[in-house]
Length: 129
Image 1 (tube, rainbow, N blue to C red):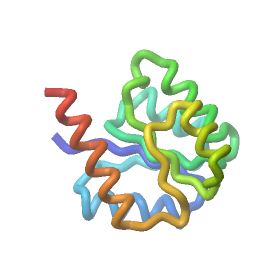
Image 2 (image 1 turned 120 degrees about the vertical axis):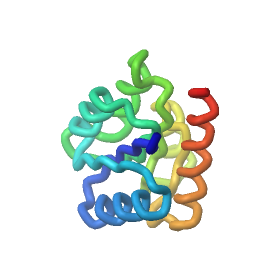
Image 3 (image 1 turned 45 degrees about the vertical axis):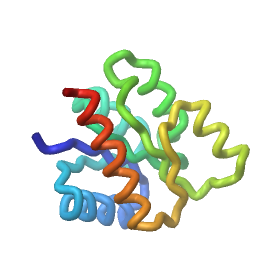
């Protein structure tokens, strides 16, 4: 079964790049959301295998959306990777406290992004056996 990845990113350029990259290279089915509220609703409805979440989102920021998803029994086990330009130790601590499972700084290194996506999707497959 094809893996489902949700990309929550307010930059249209990044949404298109991540969508195309993950579909073509990782052979995932990718959905995209432009703000935190939309991403939260799509995650709750679709239960993706992985979420790539920007932190600085409009309507509802990525920290709050992640807190809500991690507190929900249906979505709490979905790995969520932060995509962020905020990289101080303090920012990283806030992301960990919010429930993010990993952090990829922006601008992201494509190889690191693909490696991290592969690790999380493989781990998720192992859990579902």
